[in-house]
Amino acid sequence: MVREPAVKEDKTTHPGGEKTVLTIPNLLSLSRLFFLPAVLFFLFRRQALAAVALMLVSWSTDALDGYLARKLKQVSDTGRVLDHLVDKIWVGSVLISLVFLSGLPLYIAGAVIIRDLLILAGSALLMKVRGSFVSSDVVGKITGCAFALLILFYTLRSDAGNGILSGVILHIDRFRDFVNYTVLVLIVVSFLNYLGVFLRLMTKFRLPGEQE
Image (tube, rainbow, N blue to C red):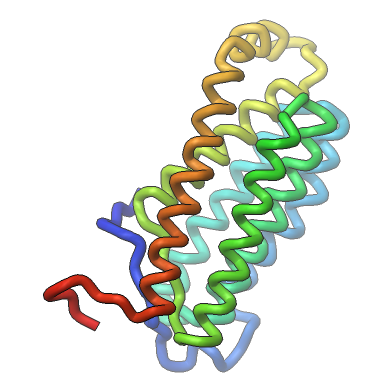
C-alpha cells in the first residue's frame, strides 16, 4: 500500500492524457463493470468462493489501472472520474445485494453509499471550480481496505454453507459486530477527513508556510 502523509490536491495530468478515453488504464477501470454481473451472479447463487475469486481479480484491476496510468503517462481527469465512478457503482451494487443475501445491515450499506455519493459530488464540484482532484491519503486507503474486508466477510456469510465453508462461517460470525462498528467509525472519520480537505481547497485556505 502506498502511504501518503495527507489527502492532497492533485492537478497532475500528463500531456496527451485527455486525447482519448480508450486508454489501457481506462479500459481496466471499465473491466470492473464487466466483472460485476458475474460477481452478482455467484452471490445470488450463494457460491461465495467463486464470488470472492472474481472480486479479487476485479480489485487487482483497480490497483493496476492507476499504476499503468502513471507508467504510460496516461493520467487524466477523465480517467480519475471514471475510476471513482466505477468503484462507487461496483461497491454500491455489491453492498445492496449483501443486504438481501447475507444480513448486511441496511444502515451500513446506506452510510457507505451516501458517503460515496457525497464524495463524488464534491469531487465533481472541485474539478469544475478549482480544476483540482483529491488524491487518497492513509485514511482513505485504510477505509477502502475496511470496505473490502466488509464485503468479503458478508460474502462468506452468504454461502450456502456446504463443504469447506460450513465451519468457516460459524467461526467468522462472532466478529460481525466488530466488523460493523469498525466500518461505521471509518465511514465517519474518512468523510470528515475528505470534508476538511474539500473546504480547504474550495476556500484556498493555507496553513502558515504552506505552499500553493
